[in-house]
Amino acid sequence: MSPPRYVWRQLTLKQREELLAWRQGNERPWHSPPHRPNFGHLNFHISAACYEHADHIGMSKARMDVFCLALLGVFSEHGAVLHAWCVLPNHYHALVETEDVLGLIGELGRFHGRTSHAWNGEENTRGRQVFHRATDRAIRSERHFWATTNYIHNNPVHHGYVKLWTEWPWSSAHGYLETMGRDEAERVWREYPLQRYGAKWDSPGL
Image (tube, rainbow, N blue to C red; front, side, top):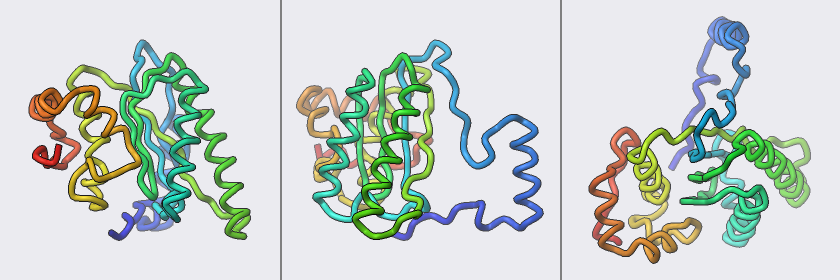
């Protein structure tokens, strides 16, 4: 699948200037969404992508394996509880419980930096930007929580990597199914559909 084109690259110079002026005037980061403290929330949908959605993570299966272990280590070391996660060749998603989302985002930024440095050294591409910034979205309800869980586990299907989410090895889907059981997982899928996430799950593939 072709990576999506970023809107920024399609803007005229005048449009870019107007957008930057608006973000600056509203105290927003110039090129990224703002990060906010927890404000009473504990669960967050965190996602991050490679720059311009290049397949840096998925250069090889071995790299995918190593990256997953390292990423899960970052969450664990920061005290975050992982409810669901999925790593794809050019981005990842995680549904986490944390009392310090800003600290966690900072740790992920440092992890991205270490990983970029290592990969650029391996590929002799010093100075190349590998990752874009991580984003976080507070989970606001039980429905939001379970719809996000379904979205994360369905993500490899949504992007066309596999036909069934159980075919993708780099996610929490198998552990989730083992813990929940087939019947409960199907009930959660029916009761909390993706809706605005805009994808369908092939539940017979459970």
